[in-house]
Image 1 (cartoon, rainbow, N blue to C red):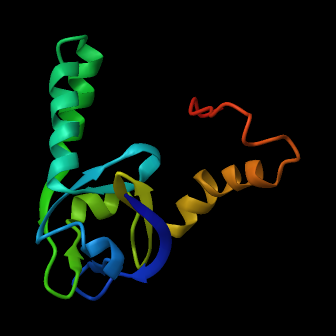
Image 2 (image 1 turned 90 degrees about the horizontal axis):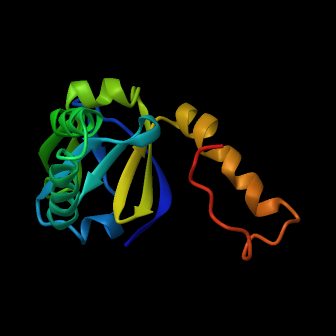
Length: 147
């Protein structure tokens, strides 16, 4: 399980350093994908395999599911994490996530997400208001519908 938030910068070669606590879950191989809300997701080989199986099965449901599976597969890349914990980000994935210089490396349970800080502030930060809302958060149902 991945959790926590870390601020890093891309180096001159377009690499980001993973926090040491995250590196423990990887040998040297990982999978980087386009992900929801405009971020990148970094998966262990085991978790990537689970997602691959889910998308593979979903293709039989509809043409929309086939297209989603195609987009996901086309936007996925096997990547290497070097001995210093650096991960080179392919140009097309940096462009997808609008990563330029600064990167938020976020533990998101079964995956690691890489965010442009501006996108994080616009898309995710508003959810923090739920933590300060006087409504009993523990009894409120989770709503992931995006509304």
